[in-house]
Amino acid sequence: MTYTPPTTEQLFVLNHIARIDAMAQHERFAAATPDMVEAIVTGIGEFAADVYAPLNRVGDTQNPKWQDGKVTMPPGFKDAYKQFVDAGWGSIDGPGEYGGQDLPFTLATVVIEALGSANMGFSLCSILTPGAIHALMAYGTEEQRATWLPKLVTGEWNGTMNLTEPAAGSDVGALRSTAEKVTEGPNAGLYRIKGQKIFITFGEHDLTDNIVHLVLARTPGAPEGTRGISLFLVPKYRLDDAGNPTISNGVHCASIEHKLGIHGSPTAVMVYGEDEDCLGEIVGGEMGGMRAMFVMMNNARLMIGCQGIQIGERATQQAQRFAAERVQSALAGSPDRTPVTIDRHPDVRRMLWRMRAQTEAARALTYYAAAQIDFGKLGDEAAAMRAEILIPLVKAHATDIGCEVASLGVQVHGGMGFIEETGAAQHYRDARIAPIYEGTNGIQAADLVGRKLGMAGGDLVRGLIDDIAHGAADSPELQQLVDACRAVTDWMVNANTADRLAGSYPYLTMLATATCGWLMAIQHKAARAALEEGGGDRAFLEAKIASTRFYLQQIVPAATGLAASALAGDAALEPLATIA
Image (tube, rainbow, N blue to C red; front, side):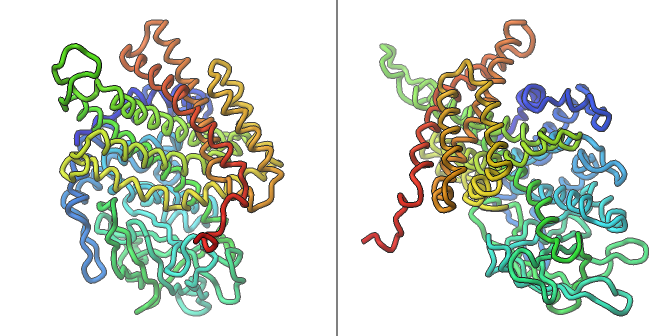
């Protein structure tokens, strides 16, 4: 289960897709010089391989332990996390006034990718903290920022996101947690929080001396549904006069879940205000909870999309190594009947190239979306709006890719892939959660054809398609997919809600694949140009040309065939009750 950081690939995508050099032309990101970028990408790769990767199997087999409301992490995790904090890896894109490095969010995405490829379950501790930081920067008070951000930025404290309840899963508006304002005494202005939340990632652990929960709850008299929800900052421990987390705050972990995968990540059932007062600070004003939460949610959705890259990269590396060593059968059609390594057999090569091309496509899509967020911060409104369109594509399509690639990894291993000791099965189990949490992939598709397609009468999506078309001149397969996406988009804009939703998932896959195809075509041209100029790593460039060609010629055409499903409408989906 050796992990090798894909540093050359990451730098290539940062330069040719994210355009990290263009970001550095702006004063805000001037520190992102080529030397700095290379140092960060190389450094986090080495850290992930040396510190996090050896704990991947440990976390899978020696799960976090819950006892009397406390969770103890697997051996080695606490020391590894301390090294992460001490090295400053959590502060890459943090605000400088609160101890961050003020570097692009795109570089922080690379950091998360590296950590997650090395150890997906463990890296979840660092995925939600940036969202908490962004929410406080957007909607927190100056006092809240000064109090909580310095240690969230360093990672000394981690942040969580508390949405889901036993009777309110994806329907957040059905939550029943309450928040009642304290009007008298030393805690006046705070809110008493009561309720239960489930599926809280790293809701309890022993890595830090405090945990900052951002909790959705309803104030007395607030309307039903999402409109009446508020957001509260609820620490595990309140701070004393010296700013130390010493005051118990009625936050209790009732249990942790026993899961299919990501065993290194404790998924907690959290209870607030059951045995003692649980006090929280409101963030963003009463009934402003969803607005503030979506700042966290969009960040989290991109980070979860990044997990598709993580699992894809790790599974691909493992499958390639296995196939290069496993000797079985002579090459079909060859007069030499000597058995060969399985990576020489055509169908295994097909699987390996598909794994590699899909993983590279997911990386390009995710880095591109992260870069659009950064350019948006620099005042590029078109980039900010493009990021809005891309978020559901990244979250849904990249996590679908992670599941597919992990499954192919098991297949390449054959029967050994189904045996836990090889590690291929762990990737498959770990990958399966990503299409579910932070808004299921079906919800991402609904968001695309509902809210996102409706922006500017469909012109934002059409603008993306136009850009793809401009880059598709040398690829007839991609041009066909562009034409199909354009036709389905026009139909979707005028279709009723039920028909749009019925075709939303195939449409999302078409649009995401077209976007990936465009980004792969850009890389194909860049690799060819570099090869002709005689610069760069020749073996890498030749492999990049091969993977991008495979994507455009073999993966893109399949997405064009989804148009019929996207256009079929609600009538094509018979109610199950009518089926005998």
